[in-house]
Amino acid sequence: MELHRYIRKMKVEISKYNIRYAEIANVSQFNVIKLKRIMSGKQEVKLSEFDALRAALVKIKSLREGREMNDEFEYLDKLYGENS
Image (cartoon, rainbow, N blue to C red; front, top):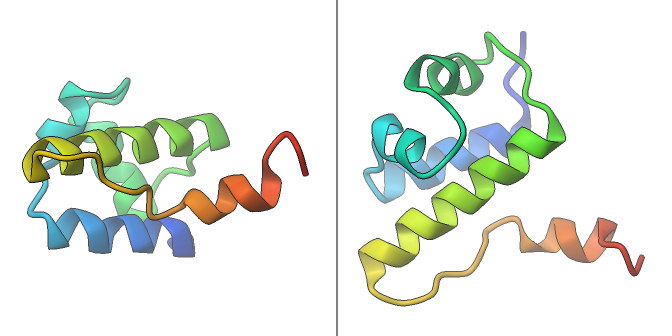
């Protein structure tokens, strides 16, 4: 299965901030095995799971930086938000 471009972008963020899958698992609903399967393209991700991954990454990045970080996928909310 081909890795979706949004998951590829997440992987770039994970690498950039040196985030471990265990950290994501600690702040999300995922276990490490499922995260590895999603990030390798072996398992598809539901939109609700994608949102949970987004939220976990933003939270981890914010904690590391000591300030609120922007969501790299915020434009999706603007495109497909409830008010659209």
